[in-house]
Image 1 (spheres, rainbow, N blue to C red):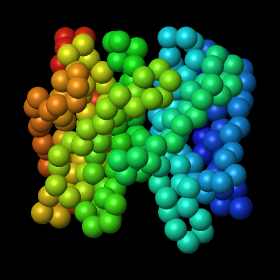
Image 2 (cartoon, rainbow, N blue to C red; image 1 turned 30 degrees about the vertical axis):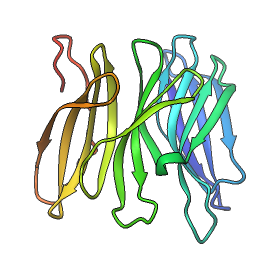
Image 3 (cartoon, rainbow, N blue to C red; image 1 turned 90 degrees about the horizontal axis):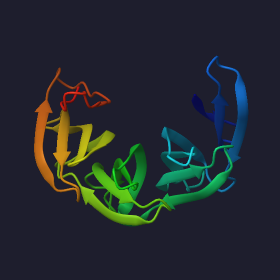
Length: 212
């Protein structure tokens, strides 16, 4: 098992803590990462990779006490928790990553949020593909008007499935979006569970090929 914590220090700089546990919950190792120039660091998801290491995605704030400068964060760790590489993404107004999944061709698909440069329309959902070394292959915006977020993504043999939420007419709605292997939308279903209630959606593929 892998446990990830974000610890807030009195100085307001957060520390990311990775804890590797065995099958009965005993600690195998602990790794602590603090970035002195960052105010806030969060890891939202971590997965195991075929090299027996790990890759984690989250959000970093490069601002100061008066401003924010949100960026997407990716950390690649080896089997022992040592950092192989760390990257932050600000291009294309990326402001954070929520979920990651490995693709059949051993790249990675990530979903998260971007923010308009002038902040007039707030945040909107994005889908990003990177190679094994964290280099961007492509980025897509999911096309919802106004505020939207992508909370979970899974890779399939025919493309990617994203779950998230968006706002329309001041009401939150959830969505499930299927894309092809280059991020073009194939279908999208939208759900309003209750007025003004947003849901941090998660999606899993069934053995039958469907989703829940």
